[in-house]
Length: 287
Image 1 (cartoon, rainbow, N blue to C red):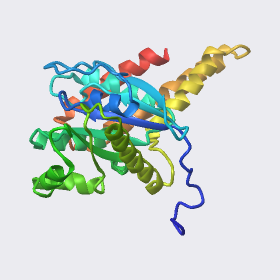
Image 2: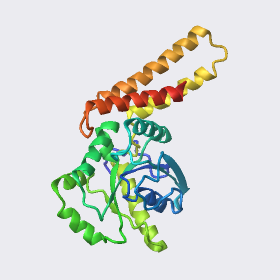
Image 3: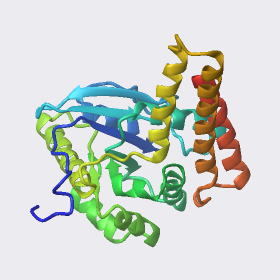
Image 4: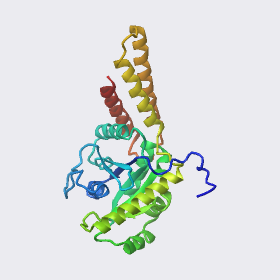
């Protein structure tokens, strides 16, 4: 793509890839992670209760030499998860993706009616990560064994306005996955298509993974925390100042969360509760 505004600093495909899976209970999120990795890395089974109860990351080597990291999240946006638990998992996910997120895979079931609640999930993700996260979002529809490419296209063309808006927001980045197939050719083809979309997302973003200021701040805090723990030769006063700076940085993270738009959140009280849980989680991690 000669003449692109990204020509000067686009990191050519060759770096590791980090994907984050987000989706509601029963949509096949963990199964999709297994299909991407080509092995049973995550527990996946039909259940009325969430099988994934905490963020997990698994990796695999691709044929082109790159390493792909997949972070499977619990049903962060299900009605049954508490604000406190959601806060803990968001922090854990951000720590796992310390080098940035190349793509967020929004997993939906092609056999389920897309609801306004599903639409609000996208808005909630924007609240947590910021508006720019949509530039890294890919829609993955599961149950490709029951719904073919042509049927999915027809469904999307006749979808309600709020679904069409999300498809447009993601610039038509839609992939269909069959997590039931044992056909290696089908498995390889759908993975290749997904990776092509991920690489196009990377190209459109100048080869840079999504690195919200919050992610950067967390890395800075960890580095400063390490200095405190390895504080041989520092005076008590210097150590005290370092700790104050760590707390100040953490408070800035929390302020950033609470100052975000409330679209996609149920109530301001709910967001404040989430912020409190994140603060408690960070306190446990840092000290």
